[in-house]
Image 1 (cartoon, rainbow, N blue to C red):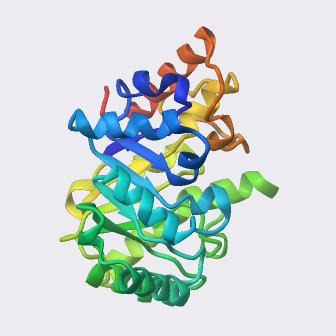
Image 2: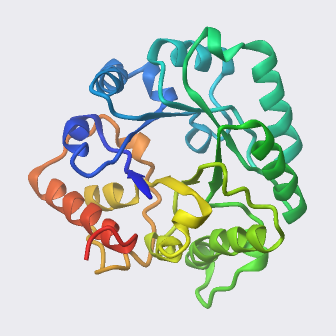
Length: 274
């Protein structure tokens, strides 16, 4: 699985040492020209760049008309077509509207990523099948509320939610496989994470199921806040701070050491390092 950990502008160049590809949050382009220019340089150097519509950070997808303008300017490797959180019908409608309004080949050479959304298992299945038929790449989110209905945790409150998100996505993937829904002819992306240890579940199945990539800022945010991963486990909690809110932060030597440590441990969690 290819990995990208979103990082502050101050260490974007250094992030190439721990990232397999570069992950761009489009809403930051409006206020951070150095951020946009990094991804332009990255593409010129032959690296893959994924352009996210910033729905997790904004609560709704970035304005489509501005999004397509930035996609045209950047010409990323992949772009996430605007989706609607936990709403399968609205996400499929958003996909159709986006493609109706914009002939992508007139703007960019990017391949399309379709995010699966839904409140119920059937919603998720319907949206998955739609993306399988239409998208080049299929993305599965880490935090569907449905996970709270099918997964269990002994821990109370927010920690319990983290546990259920951690096991819920792997349960969903296994169920989609068992039900004959999963399309392993399409590459898949795992969007975000609650707890890093989730990804251990995909080591034996990633190649077979074509789980090609994932993104999570967790090891970087943890390092910025002075938390170090436990060996091959990560953290038992998740800092609530968004990486996007620290995009312009300075990074001192101690923080950088913690980030390098955490990103290295993350590679061990997914079976990349012994």
